[in-house]
Image (cartoon, rainbow, N blue to C red; front, top):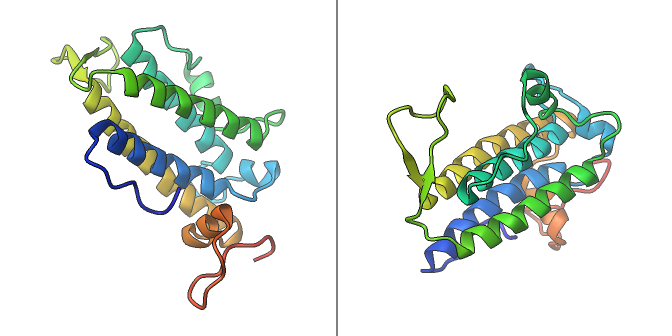
Length: 192
């Protein structure tokens, strides 16, 4: 996907394009990393690229679970599970984490394409970060929230990637999409 979301008057397509654009930001930050590099947490936060890929997939799946009214598949039943959701484990691979992200993305597109953007999504009760005085969000609100949530983590991923090997967003995007080199933009290559 290019650096900009599509231009369209179709609201669902536009919303999904912005979600995909931010998701691609995380995918591009992971471009060319080894599993070992994807596990690195080179900043004070302790976040890693692999962990962010896992977390975004889990979070997006959790929101889509709410939209379709099914029990969460996230598996974050306690704090240890929650923390593990931010790490790429020793037996996990970046390729598998990205494959999960892609599968979640395909489901999001399918669910939102079929949904009524004004449809109600019940607010779970007893969750401290959810409003207690609201019964439902709209599907539209959920998709906009996904844009915000994923964008926040795409920014984290950009900083982490730059801390790992100095690679930045546009050269990574150019490399992942096969853009030709120009005098003002050189696609990232291993060893840069």
